[in-house]
Length: 122
Image (cartoon, rainbow, N blue to C red; front, top):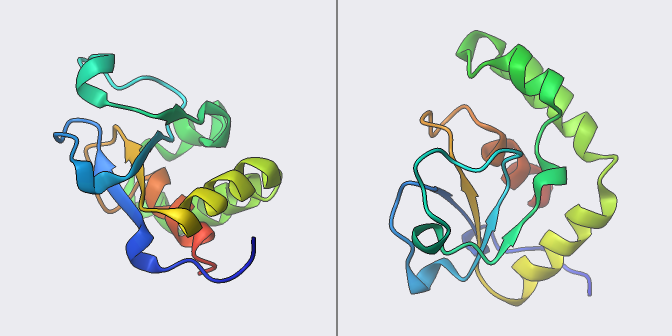
């Protein structure tokens, strides 16, 4: 299946926010399970650990906004090696809403933001 993905079809949501029917398919995109969140409360449909930033990149970034620009470039480069997982996410987003679920507290500087931009071809 080809074609552009509507931006509204790829949503971001913290794992600590309540799941909603409007979320569509909920995919956890972190390598580690969010602390203090039960599997039931998370309501995760898929957990794509392998699409998360490498441990080295995640630790280097440390959610430091001063490293954001470099983190985005490095993570986008890592994502290019995960073509099959990107393809699976794109296919989901073309069919129905897709919510990328993440555990970071910073809603602006996190891996899900970068992943969403890559999925949307930005």
